[in-house]
Amino acid sequence: MSERVLTLTAMSSGYDNTAVVRDINLHVDRGEVVALLGPNGAGKTTTLGTISGIVKLMEGSVEVMGHAVPKLRKAHQVAQWGVAHVPEKRGLFFQLTVDENLKLAPGLTGPTDKAYDLFPALKPLKGQLAGTMSGGEQQMLALGRGLLSDPSLLMVDEMSLGLAPVIYEKLMPMVRQVADETNAGVLLVEQHTDLALAQSDRAYVLSHGDLVLEGSAADLLRDRHLIDAAYMGVEELDSDEEIDCPHCGKTVSTSATHCAFCDLALPENGA
Ligand SMILES: Nc1ncnc2c1ncn2[C@@H]1O[C@H](COP(=O)(O)OP(=O)(O)OP(=O)(O)O)[C@@H](O)[C@H]1O
Ligand SMILES: [Mg+2]
Image (cartoon, rainbow, N blue to C red; front, side):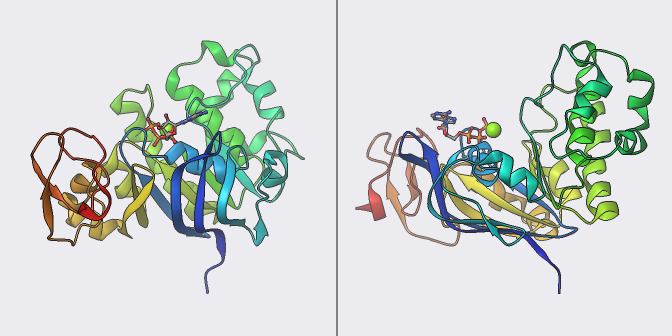
């Protein structure tokens, strides 16, 4: 049986005592690439932050490698349990060189060679300041640094952010390669849905803080319209019931929390 590296059970979390993601059930096994998709503001970054102990866990549980992530933010502890988090803005020290950035990798105990083996393009840049690298090179450095600690779970937030398609189309398969070669589980947050699904085994779709869709990447690629509907704020895609939005008058599903047309909140249960 495959080993589970991450389990979220009925997880809610957010900021200033207000939950922005609610009742999330999600898991990642070793060697799997799992995409976490959803429109801007859906709660993807918040979910990753909660897993790595940066954002406050409010309800439910987060388990990584069999350890329960504490409600009090303990990012250092979670990193020690084998979680590497490559954040949206890559988290590099721009005034330090490539090699210095690698030496500061959380949980690093040995040499930095492995990052250069994984990303040979970094080798000639060893002494270059991270702040002077191209976006694609910075992303490779961020990934390489994340992988130095031999993580059981690698989380990558918006790898393609700010990069030209020609660059992120080359980087994205590297995530698959990491899962295949190191047997780490990967949780991949990405705006480029098709590209992410092409490298993933399974995917979850978040909308307005709720998980509205999940399935195998192959099924979701085939039923692409389900993802489009989820991005428009439809919560239960198999529901046929409809109401008129009280704000704009357009017809929407009773199960949506927000109108797909004007984005204003809908009354609960279509009441
Ligand atoms: N530090 C914070 N304090 C308060 N609210 C926040 C904070 N960070 C995010 N939020 C809010 O939480 C919600 C979810 O944001 P989050 O960044 O998780 O979304 P996302 O799915 O990652 O979006 P994007 O695709 O734009 O990166 C948004 O409404 C956002 O405004
Ligand atoms: Mg985000």
